[in-house]
Length: 385
Picture 1 (cartoon, rainbow, N blue to C red):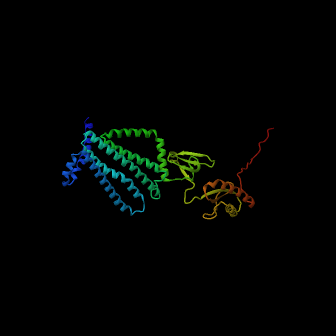
Picture 2 (picture 1 turned 120 degrees about the vertical axis):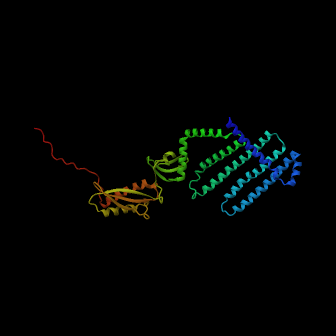
Picture 3 (picture 1 turned 90 degrees about the vertical axis):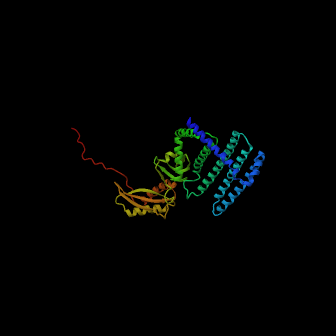
């Protein structure tokens, strides 16, 4: 009980502070104006109208000065963002000054304390809503500006803007709601506790969705791959990335099958990006064996010529090359290394190179050995008599 009384007293003090601030308006009038003001107060509606007119004029002059002074500063910048921010804040700035005078005007009518306090609270609530809506506009302007400067703010991109926009609006609504509760004399402690319990419940119920959402946010921010890249996952999937969303990533396989992978899964997987690196080029390896006794220099020349004769193999920077890798169990192991323009060509060009290597070895008389085993019989069993 004592705690509730303390809260009510604190809220009453906040309301009285607002009332005192409005009443102190008269104290700022020059002494020569005081007698005239006392006469005007004898006609409440006249005082009400004069204060409203005065408030409108003062608010207009203050807003004009606000625009002019800030415009002088914004002229030094090349961006038009600051001009948009000034335009967005102009209306709530005007309403703040005008509503102050409107509150003073309400005090002059001589309404009952309850009705007067209610009208002032309504004015304050409208002012909070005005600032809240302009806060949404300012948030959109800032996010759009940051997304255009992605080289400086990599985490803010067109695909992450909805998440930042949602978080920003939730924070603004939370602050605005808290201020409104205080204005109307409602204890915000219970509401905050209920919101906390509700947030925990929603978090447990939608933990998978939230995990995918935040994983998608970090994937877009970190960009381990992008649309058009060919990726290999440690689970065996390989395909071209066709969509990177906040909830999932889609791969189109070589079988023209689309795979949708939750971002929570792909965010914790090992990813091989075939389009990563310094350029989009990709290297393929063709392993081939030559029989022992073959001319190794001739083998290298034949393999290099096969790569040079293929129209889609890159011939310079870097050039195709051949490496002898090992002395195998039944062959000399060579490897043809060739670069191709993009990873999507990997399967077809490797197939064509294998066929050309086989034909070239046959023409050059180079044997491609195969594994074979010889069986020696030490003695035949003697037939029984």
